[in-house]
Amino acid sequence: MYVRIMSRGDLRAAVATVVAAVDDLIACDSDLATAAELVEVLDELETLGCRLPAVRHRLLARLQVETTPAQMGAKNWKDVLAIRWRISHSEAHRRLTDAAVLAPRPPVTGPPLPPVLPAVAVAQEKGLINPEHVTVIRKSVEKLPGFVDTATREQFEVDLVRAAVGAGPKALHDTAELRLFLLDQDGPEPDDTDRARQRAVTKHPQRRDAMTDLKMVLTPEAWAVWEVLFARYAAPGMCNPDDPEPCTSGTPTQAQIDNDHRSLAQRQHDALLAIGRIALMSGDLGQLNGLPVSVIIRTTLQDLESRAGIGVTGGGTRLPIKDVIRMAAHAHYYLAVFDRATGSALNLFRAKRVASPAQRIMLIAREGGCTKPGCTVGAYGAQAHHLTDWAAGGLTNIDELGLACPPDNRSVKAGGWSTTMNNRHDVEWTPPPGLDTGQTRINTHHRPEVLLRPPNDEQPAEETKVESPAPTDPEPATSTSDPAEPGGPAPPGDQAA
Image 1 (spheres, rainbow, N blue to C red):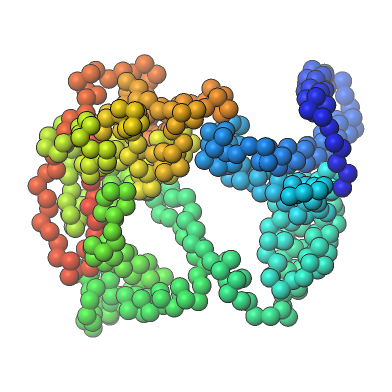
Image 2 (cartoon, rainbow, N blue to C red):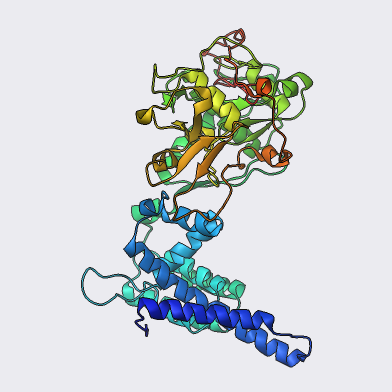
């Protein structure tokens, strides 16, 4: 593959020429063009759009040699692209992955090494294939078994590129799957490396009906563990939520077995829930960011009283309020509702650097997750963050703390990100100069209701003041010997935590 070596001035001049040409193109009047002329121009624009990513791949690869994400003020390269260009993390991941396999590789010494997928790189540079083709070929090459030798792997890539030149992404995908099947049907047995590469538990976005889809690819060992657990807890009559007193230990009665009309899939779902409750109630799961591993739900006192609305877990899962109340009624620890209550100290000033459990619960209630704009890490994966660094005199008070995931927490430093609290009690993040394009300063991912606020809707001082909360009297403790009851505290948030 031919790569022209250009100086810094040549590169800037070439980009300026492209910008000027695009300006001229946008200014052109197309009203007098015939259908044939329009099709011809669109064809040329499509080819040009297919070629431009090749330039971006080389520039991204070079940027990763010249600097680091930390020097640009981000925790990884996906963040650099997502923050600076306001693209999704999945799109940033796709661009970086394509650049890793289609751009010349920097050598330790000597000339640049060819791309990992040289045939794909050449075809893209000439505009013969589009980004969808690239994605199909890249993912298909990743599926090649470990026993495939280098020559066969290279020929597989060339064959797919040849097919892509005359076919769409769907036909190319079907061709790739057929070739993979023909290639592997007489191959050796899958080894541990191939199995380990494929293992996965994938959570899909929560549906509008609040259900969540999971996709699992389990290793033989993992399934062997769940196989016996399902044999015990998913047996007919076991863990049946329709029973007045579900059987979760011992042997179900014959009546419970006869009245169990659930499918195997439903019994396995209920067994999964029961096993999770047992684990939560065991008390052997340790701590997560300073709190016992438990379900924490935030909602409002008004929703609890009206039995309408939703609660949101520390991981961002939406729960109907009736489920919140049912879980709270059997919580292993307590349900504490905070509505201008007093009791647990929320202001530690300089007495302690580490936030108290009461403060952590209130942070979960107030923010729901990492407060850095664009970060989707929920409260379960976030830490209490001093808006003013503790070493610089920051106070451990609720109005001077926010939630931040560990990488974002570490990104706040001199020359990097900075954080402040505005008069609405929103944590604002100011990017370093290399990433600051005037983007939003607050994160609305965990609190979309913030987007509905009027722009000048200021709260009176007495309304925004955060009072010290005190837990209500705990619910009667549920015996840990009865795993049918859900485990973990469920402190709701906002006005309840």
